[in-house]
Length: 487
Image (tube, rainbow, N blue to C red):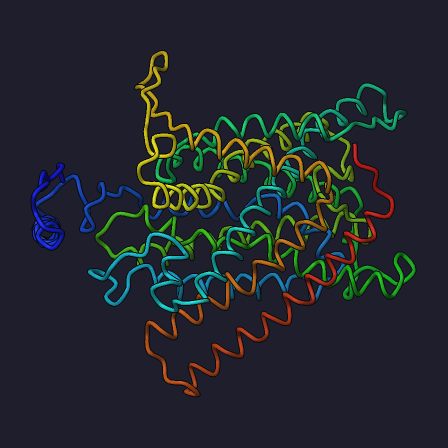
């Protein structure tokens, strides 16, 4: 709507006029009168089941896949795959519950919730909204740290792989992660200036292709290693006592749960992804289909990568399949896989951080609506492209965010431990508790009914798993800090 000049009108008249004009716009949109705007007055959404699937796969098949062989090695041939299937089912089921909460009331005409926090606020409200916001955005911040660590490890792996090849495995080929973390941080500063989630579909597509590339290479190398060994390594109960102590086995088993949970985690950005989908059909229907495609695809990849890695190395499965140097050759194939990991993580970092960026910028615009620093856009010419809308607050705040995550990554570069903590911290509240509670509220499920009881049992069981995973991962960090010297 254009500016309305009502300088001499009363505040009540202004509101009436705005509401009247807005209702006309919405009625026009609902009746198909606008080809450019959706029913909420925003620009027409263009997302499909395939773009949504690409966003999810980009978010899900990330650095977590690389630790799955290690996780299965801790749990064994029985518990490892069983836990993976269990997490896949829980993630898919709760994602379907969450998809139904995108609109309040009717799935076709109800009011939209644009973010995960909006959905919690509408359905649960009060202190739960604040709690959700704190947990969600701390988790997104942690994911950015985890991806920075994973990307730097892969970049170092390329250098070490080439070094091993040149020295014929005679040199330890040591290298510092710090310069590579800085390089990754610089690239993220640039990509973080992409204004909106809806404008990174191309980055998600590229990242999704990269994720299949390195997952496929890891799986192929595992199969080749099994063929070379002539047998499947590993045991039914996982890593044996003697290789590790009884206490270490317990902590590692708990940590493995966190690693698997992290490998599947994407619920925290599901609502934001769903907000990019066009209708009809209803966004919930499309999102459920995208979730089924994505979770099924990733589970197949996870089973193949994790199980083949464990079959290849048994108790000695590395914490990061492609950088732990269980494989040395062919070195050029390892290089391709690790470069693909880095490219994927550049995109995945943005998929996870864009919702956090948007939240802070929306809050700042509401807090200081008259500030030019926060709200004014400047046309910055780009050679051969349309002018870029430069916002000074976006430039400064997003740069500070990336710098901060990079510095923390330098101080705590423990891949498996950080991945386990992130998985444990975000899994129960964001993937299970809030979706279950919102669904119960939205569908008005009676307390103590069979469905209510089953949902609460699911939530309680996942809480126990999260606590166990967090305990094991924190114990791992404490152990690693005893021998780690930063920089």
